[in-house]
Image 1 (cartoon, one colour):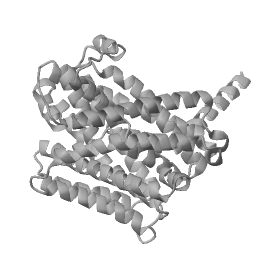
Image 2 (cartoon, one colour):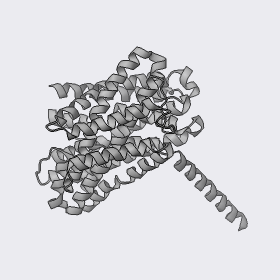
Image 3 (cartoon, rainbow, N blue to C red):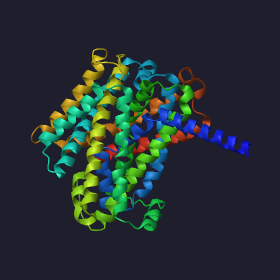
Image 4 (spheres, rainbow, N blue to C red):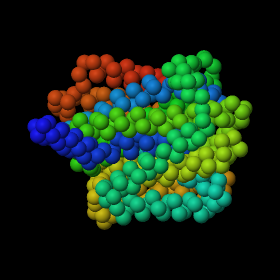
Length: 419
């Protein structure tokens, strides 16, 4: 009997130890994935549900697999090389390619940052607060959070923000949907070959796998100090984050499908979706949706400029770490501050062409993603960088197939955007 008790005690201690290790190492994977459910992502999912009902839910399954494959490679390069993605690209492909890549990435991320501040303005207007109050306050908050903190404090704040995505899941249960019907739609591929539905499908994929994510994930793993020994925990973090982000996307699409689509209501933005939910699903559901939009927009308004600062500073060999002070890394914090205040300032301008900014930033994302994924695959298979952690044959087959499909969809997204 004593032996059994000792065995149970040992198993419990081992389990708690492993669980503790997992929570010590998580952060980069789940943060990177969750922030991709930003203002643009929530708008895309809302439109997908409102326009096509449950027909596009199944796409989230292959998207989850693709996200895991891509993010796992980023995490592996980070823990093995100890360098960010832009740093590796500069070393392997030269300064000229890296320079032009950084210009394109900056323009894309700047457009996305502007859309996040638009999300802050839109969500707070639902609660009756003017953008001339909400946007400056939001901008100062995200600037203060990063500039005055360090990696650990910033990561804790970002992980807390991840928890608030539960508001979308709670909203989904509040409408009491027909779960058997939703289950059938989730596992039954349905895609009509008309321009609108194909474009929406590409939009769902494009908003889930963005170029900036690969740079931020790898840089944050390096800044966190994770090494090759902790690779299995970094991989678990990536898998958990990739699944969680698409669960949230699932609930947003489903919520809008069983309310807005079934009642024939048309929307153009996530703000429209939140307002339209009030008479259909109750004011609490509407408020939860609006709160989720605010949280997502603030979260992304912090991460996108931070990702850009990491990426560009690494590319040019400047100091880039949240564990430094402003005077120790002036380029890093200066670029972060510039993007925050420029993004917020643009939203406060009268008659700003916001739709055009958001639209062309997504087009740039679509143009940039194929090159980033090809760079990643060439780097992950370089034994001089990865040693024994290069892709195996099967992983290469899966990875190249994933990249080929995503690149084809990116080209299709850009072509459909122009025509």
